[in-house]
Length: 497
Image (cartoon, rainbow, N blue to C red; front, side, top):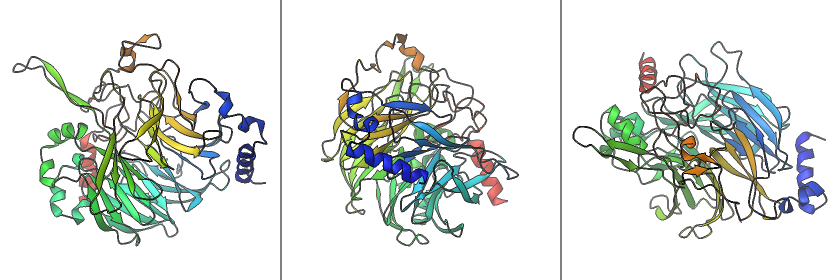
């Protein structure tokens, strides 16, 4: 019996009540809501779950990891692949923040990187056969001349973010041939977008539902494409897209404006029908004043939440509601992040990650009135990158959340019950104390560098030399000197030459 068949059989036994360890999952925590368990995974970032809910696949910064989650109170690592593509003269592949399963062929995993520019390091999309998740096998590697922060995979096509500081385009590759077959950017709509500073219009993420792609273009809004012909993406509509003239300014001004609302379209996903669109908006506050003309400092902006939109008519989307973010004792970029990150819809539920603000479950069956069902946070311990459903159901269901670590705890994969509940004595994110320590323990001090980043969010990340470009929303790695906007300029110059 193959490993996947064994895990699937175990899940079926648990659902039928024949396995003691799985049939009693819901009874394992009859009282306050808390995680089933966790497993440490160095460098954990994005996670995706197999359709049968038994295996989680993690981007792990220096590689990728598969985790058995079929018994959620005892998740365990199945395979850990570090330093892939190390045979390349500029290998290995590094800065791996995203992995995706082909939604129509879940035996195919695509691993992309680096998430942000790293000079003289190989970039591209690694295709892996995960039919045996305990023994993943490399199939092919599609090399690119640009970093890949995020991707989506469907129907043997990979949709890649190409942030080159110029067009910042969506690129579609055919996984069978390894060829780029399609491309689309904002400049296809209007060449004026090319005059907007790149910091305001990075293509941060892409989501594909059937024949429709949704592109999160940060301050430029979300754009909706028909990809029924992957080689020829065509525009269907946009959500909250401003006039490009509103995003003008110098690079230094643009970097500051890109940190704060409005805009900041970071992550997008739809429900199963494709008519309800969630837009996660990642932002922070900026402190202004405190000079000779203004002796008092004050904050502008702050963390953003998740907007729910009806996109049944892509040409005329309608806003339904906004799920607000948890509060932060210091909402600046160098403070405590509680802004929206990644999420997933399933059967009228929304599973979401809010960095130090924890993970949440909402009932969004009425998108005009989302209801919070579950909220678990432990900001000293966990800063959540993603939340993904594994197996639905209040009795035996569970979902996963990845934490990329804090100064007090390593990066981990957590498993949580899929039912409503209240955390016992939940920490108050705005209180003066948290778990016996001062709130100040959550707030890092700014490291050197022009982007004002801090040690707070990087936690135990060991990829210190793969710092990111000075572009917000890219899970900026903190610590060793940030590459800054100069990296984008060097990349642009190399492309022209």
